[in-house]
Image 1 (tube, rainbow, N blue to C red):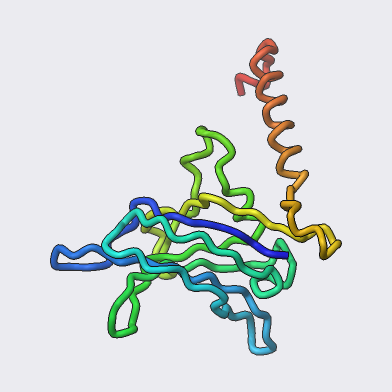
Image 2: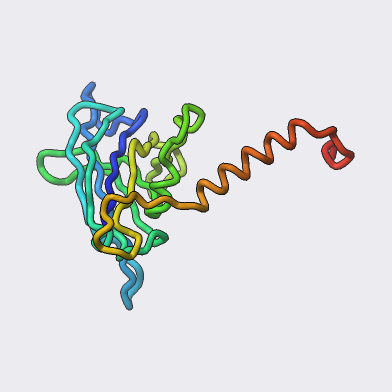
Length: 182
């Protein structure tokens, strides 16, 4: 199977000084368990967007085996860097997620459009901006290698949204009870 996705940064903190603006790019890392402990290795590097704190990076298509061994719940990390010509890029922030997290983070309506992953530095809790999922689809996960055109649809996500909407409408139409006032 393959993962197609596109990310964009929103209100990233500037890592430059002297009136210059950061040139962000991101790297996607997969978690690898080793006898010495878990570590992350880079599996993808995005294009660099020059002088932007709200970059829209190019869409990418990656092999699921390379990213997560086909495991939708395997941890992965996204680190956003400020590009430096000499090669010592400066970290702007990072977040951890899974492939399923990417799929669930994609906005399904205008109400969801504010959702995104909060960027933080490892030694801080301060938000360094957000990274939003513009698009994310998984294809070829049905077990049949020839069915590449079918996107992966997580029935649990759709079911949860339907259940949540039903609960909200039921809640708004009923009379308040004693426990509602506690």
